[in-house]
Image (cartoon, rainbow, N blue to C red; front, side, top):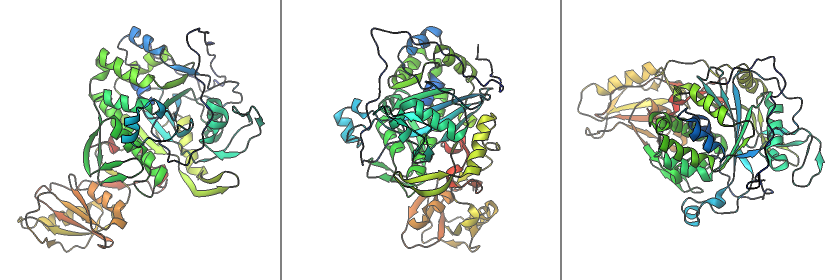
Amino acid sequence: MPTPPRSPRTTAAPQRRPQQPSSRRHPRRPAPPVRRRKPRWGMRALTTLSVVVLASAGIGHAVVTSLDADIARVDAFKDMKNRPQAGHGMNVLLVGTDGREKISQDERQKYRLGGAPCHCTDTMMIVHISEDRERASVVSLPRDSYAVTPAHVDRTTGRRHEGHPIKLNAAYAEGGAPLTVRTVENMTRVKIDHYLEVDFTSFMKTVDVVGGVQICTAAPLSDSYTGLNLPAGRHTLEGGQALQYVRARHVDGASDLGRMKRQQRFMAALVERVMSSGILLNPMKFRDVTRAVLGSVRADKGFGTAEMLALGRAMRNFSPSSSEFTTVPIGQLGYAVEGVGSTLKWDPVKAERIFHALRADQPLSVRRPRGEARVVPVAPQQISVQVENGTPTPGLGRRVDAALVSTGFRTTGAPVNAATPDVKRTVVVYDPRWDRSAKSLAAALPGSELRAVPGLGATLKVIAGTDFERVRKVRAEDPGQGESGVVVRGDEVACS
């Protein structure tokens, strides 16, 4: 039966059974970090959500028990004292580490995975599973976040350090999982119940074994560092290409913040794929998927078979609409710290709202009815549009213009005929400098094509084609939270 809810008055950490010695296995210890100036690749942690969702569907105790033995263990809560008060629900810290040494040389070259592994972490997420198991809230913690460590012993040199400023991802290099957990708890005052660590070598296998994951993009995505090259539209990504998609940091000027949004989109799409494919009802497929995931996972000693079974039984009706995603709001970009470098400083007020919601087991945002409005990066009220009728149908231009105005867009109010009347697919023409506005406009025109024209200027152009059916409602990302603190549901970022 599911694990009973915890009382918010309980402050002591639950006792964990000591690990039994084994002559066959020893806990794997991370190697010392290797400093590199190569781009880092962030999406190792999202496959760990599969451990939460996949490894516990109640298919059969024997299957899960056999898989439990494949998980390497880490004492993430060693000597933990003065921890935050426990609340309702379950908080899991997902940490992604490097591990490309297990990938073949051919795949390294094909997917731009050269260089030595750094044995470091640059992806961190808190996943909160509500007490009623009907909601998952995922909060991404930027790797360059300004942080102050508690006092600790350096795991490499053995020297004792007092608390000092660092980038958040450096906590792992200095003190491994225990220091990472302690630093996150100090910053958020959210008690971490379980720790899961995964490298990206299992990522490609996991995506392949579920049959690929579908993503949609309103504009072409190209990143010379990872080799990503996707045209606009709908794509089913297999392992290697999916890895390129979630690693990409040079698609736009948003760098890590943009990458985290793509990671969240992919995570929502992965959940949808798992829940709609029947994998959880197929013991053989279930076994293959979980083996692919668990091959590179390290977990705390308290996350075992019983916890996975109870969680899986409770989450049978889970869906993308049950999940919500955000990145901790940033108050200052490029916050310079002597000896540390440029960091991201959290907005204390807005960040506290998010972490208070996790502690109180509350949704991160007000739930909107499905289909009410699509989340877009720029408010329609800020976008200027000229409408052209690209068909022989009289009055189509006026109809499209009126529909855009009713949705909030600022049209010229004077639609004209296009140069040719044989446009089949509606086109959004835009200057590359206004690409975010173009993505917002394209989201309001389902099935439309994006076409960049340098020098067009601030007014975007819509050429209505014979495929035009409607203008979909869109809403801007929450201006009160800022671009890095937007909360979206899984069904809002998945393909329509």
